[in-house]
Structures are given as C-alpha cells and as structure tokens.
Image (cartoon, rainbow, N blue to C red; front, top):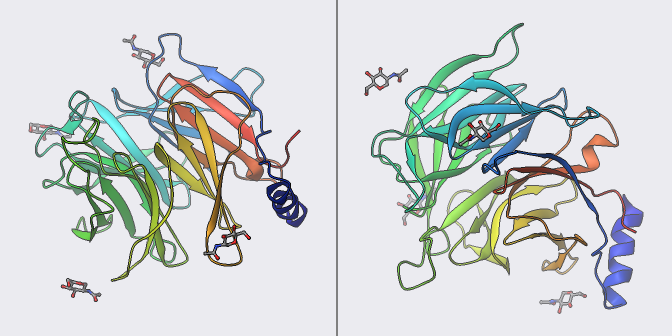
Length: 309
Ligand SMILES: *[C@@H]1O[C@H](CO)[C@@H](O)[C@H](O)[C@H]1NC(C)=O
Ligand SMILES: *[C@@H]1O[C@H](CO)[C@@H](O)[C@H](O)[C@H]1NC(C)=O
Ligand SMILES: *[C@@H]1O[C@H](CO)[C@@H](O)[C@H](O)[C@H]1NC(C)=O
Ligand SMILES: *[C@@H]1O[C@H](CO)[C@@H](O)[C@H](O)[C@H]1NC(C)=O
C-alpha cells in the first residue's frame, strides 16, 4: 500500500488528486427506498439499515447478482440507523420510531439492540440499552479495546453518547460546539454530529449542519477540525485515512500528512446518488480494499480503493 501513499503524494505535488476511482453499482432498490448505514460481517456479507424500515437487510457483495434479503425485523420501531460490530459477528443496531421531516425520534422509542450471528440458524436479538433521553440517534461506532462499549451520535441533541451494551448504561461522552447543530438560522435539516468512529484513542466525527470532519481525544481534549464538506458517515482505514460519504454525490478522502494536517480530496470519477455511509470489506486481501457504500437513493455501491485509473 506504500506505493499508493507515495503516488498520492506525487499526484498532490503535481496538482491533481486521485479522482479516478470508479464506483460499481451492486444493487438498486426498485422503489428507490433509502439506505442509511451498513456493516460488513466476517463472512463478507453486508448488513444494511434504512431509516424508513424496521427490517435489517443483508446482501452478499461477492454474488454475481446480489439480492437484498431480510435478516430481522425489530419490534416497536419504524426505522434503523447506525450499526457496528462490537464483538465478532455480534452487532449493535439503533432502532426507533422515527419521523423523517423533521428528523427526530419519538420520545422514549430509541433502543440499541444487539444482534448475535454466532450461533447456527437465525440471529438472536437482545435489547441492549434504552436511551430515553435520545432525540435522534444516528451514527454508531465501537470502542477498540472495550468490547462492551459503543458510541452513538445524537444529531439533534448534538452529543455523542457512550453506551455499555452489556449493562445498558449510557452517558454523554462529548458535547461541544463541534458536535451540536447550528440551529434554525442555518440551512435545514438541523442536525449536528452524524457519523462517528473511534481510532487510536481519538473520536472522529462528522457534523451535518456545520459541514465538518473533526476529531477529539477520548477523555477531555480539544476538538480539531480536519476539513469541511457536506459529510455523512465514513470509514477509517488501517493507514489512518478517512473515506467520507459526501452529499450530494461524492466520496472524500482525508489523508494524514507528516506535519499533522490532512489532505482532503474527491476520489470518485462519477457522481454517487446521495451517499450515506461507507464500510470496508473483510476476509481477504482484495475484499479489505473494497469500500462499500449505501445511498439514500437505495443503492449499494462498491469502490475498489486499491488503485485508480
Ligand atoms: C421498498 O423496497 C424495500 C426493499 O426491497 C422494501 O423493504 C420496502 O418495503 C419497499 N417500500 C415500499 C414503499 O414498497
Ligand atoms: C413495544 O411497546 C409496547 C408499548 O409500549 C410494550 O408494551 C412492549 O413491551 C414493547 N415490545 C417490545 C418487544 O419492546
Ligand atoms: C471533563 O470536563 C468536565 C467539565 O469540565 C468535568 O466535569 C470532567 O470531570 C472532566 N473529565 C475528565 C476525564 O477529565
Ligand atoms: C502541511 O504539509 C502540507 C503538504 O506539504 C502543506 O501544504 C501544508 O501547508 C502544511 N501545513 C502546515 C500547518 O504546516
């Protein structure tokens, strides 16, 4: 992979980016129904959420003609959002009765479920935590080294919760100007922190209304803004880069530079249709370089990040 990093640096000096990755459409819902987030199982199969359906879907991206299949339907919910694998093949998933315009969850309806695929047969679901104070739970992330903890972004409250999925305990992990929405004075929707992921003791997060990607050390630290754009959820890779779903139709790559700043560039050569999240493949050298993306237009897209044209 080092050659690619060097190539990026060369291209950067040459004044052009790596705007050469070609997204491949794997699936499109016939009705255009929105996809919100996704996670990749150890088997390489995708788990896909929609804010307008209480059903979790799966899709095998390695199939010749991938189909969308139902996995599990959560009770007392109208939509799902963040999903994250907190133990091997065990996933935390946000479910709620949600209103999309304006975007908010019905008071008291927000639940983080645990869905366990480790046994044979159908997955088993467990209500891991209720978050009664939540107003609009959106992105979800794991906390490396702490397999009972997840972090969840509340876009309306403008906070990140830390949730213990074993005990159900939840607390506000961070509330900062950088995580809050701006408010009605800025273009709608009034949503702040959206995607969030923890890596190497740092919480990376996007903010919808402020249009930023930021990071902050876990515990009390100063928020650092890495760049700006109409960002949704994102994936971090093993080189510390962030691949960010960007509205209305792009993928933005943040590459850390030696001096501590980040290079920000658009890396797809075609227009994506309202991308909402991104996750890397599993299980095998090629798969781990494939970035899978969901879109709000009901698409599943694969971007091979191992090279450009
Ligand atoms: C749209 O398609 C999805 C996925 O197949 C399905 O779950 C959903 O019920 C459909 N929505 C409508 C309104 O038909
Ligand atoms: C669904 O909500 C109803 C009414 O609040 C409650 O009685 C029931 O226990 C809930 N079911 C589940 C599975 O959470
Ligand atoms: C972080 O700051 C808050 C508010 O100043 C304080 O209450 C809390 O104890 C601090 N936590 C840590 C881990 O330093
Ligand atoms: C960091 O390095 C990049 C690329 O060499 C340069 O463009 C940028 O100005 C530097 N920023 C700082 C704060 O040194």
